[in-house]
Image (spheres, each protein chain N blue to C red):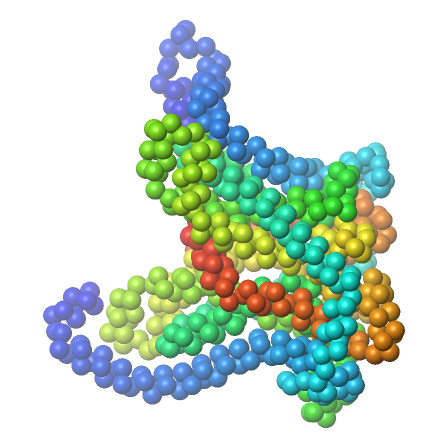
Length: 311
Length: 326
């Protein structure tokens, strides 16, 4: 209706909307100033904690304890970095994190890809049941205790399997990948089948080469999740030398048992640097994520949106 | 399945069709499907084993909520005790305190973490400078990528006696407060750290939905004399309504599970009165008191309520706004 009206009397509508446009800019300009202030605040509030932790990590203990460190390091020192880096348990735990992340991600990618490919075949008999089996677990889970009993009685404790296997498929990731496979043109696969390629060959030689972007996204989704995870290790790893670095940080922060050797170092060096040490540990565990973040961010965003199309 | 149901009415002659014909037909189509697609099905075997062992077996494992369980014994428990453990927690005053805490934290999280991403997305949508917009987005997504351990560590640093927040308190002439030891502060701390970590990331889907709104609708509204505010109210918000509803349902799905890991990292016996929730309580019952059956009963209770919440939210959404998860 309105468009017809506009088409009939173009000149008048243009003038009208122009006039309104000018009037609006006054109120709207005020809004934009406020909006700018709000968004600046969002940026500041988001970034401040990081800046603060970095400042603390490079400050002398006495300035931290007296509450004088916020944006800039006071009593600049990098000794605490050296102190932490000389702790062999920190590096052992770091290596564990890398090992757990790589192993678990590889397993997850293989499992998720296979299942997502099967689920993407719309004509497959029993497909909706296969989808249902996966989706139901998004909303109802066995819970902590039965899971713990299961993992323990399977003898997975103190091994990478306790971290990798119980979380092998994330259903959200599965649905993202399924949506991607469904969007691929079927002609290529049909032609390959006519040429005598079997299902495995089609998946490996036709579908996966077309799906590099989504596989890369999935690798990042899983890798970041496993890199950040701590609870499985907390439950299932009894020995310090098996812990990932997240548990190292957790124990240091919680002041719980396990960080004794760090305490020993501090005492031995007669550096009472507990507050600085905590900040340094936070910085060194956050750093890898911060370094890759600019490069992986857009893949994440794309993956999330792909999942939203057919979530 | 659909073929068998159409077969039955189309064959009304009783002497030629034996009563067991539909199942056999179904079996035959299955056999044909298996013969044709066995390679596809074979790809599903390992993932199905994963789901059966690590997702469905633990669901069955919940029978220990109705049976006496001994650590190291049978994983499905020793003998039936009926509803003993359920009666136990229903008569446990701590349970009710913990239950209330769960509802309060869940409600507060929903109240802040659901609408704030919408507001931020709308504000971002008004930014015309593309580079600036992208910069704000990138910064706001960042906390999402951090481990919960790191988030908890940062919270502890900021709230420590010598941390930034207490510096501000002192500058305002107040006394430093040991925030993490005070039960009256826990909810504020929990919800604000949750907002810090999730709001930016939460905008992604809304920003995507905003770009799909037809520009002509704004044009039409403008010609009808709608102000910017009215355009937002009558065009933008209805445009992102399906996204809002979907995310609301998903949020309700995690209502009962409230940030278990984060609470576990941030709470301590001093803050139990407000911080202890069902999942942390059952964690302590299981792993500190070694009462697995009791803990499993609480876990089952939590999971069932969570499922009911999602199902009813989904149902209501489908009836009222016509959007739902399935």
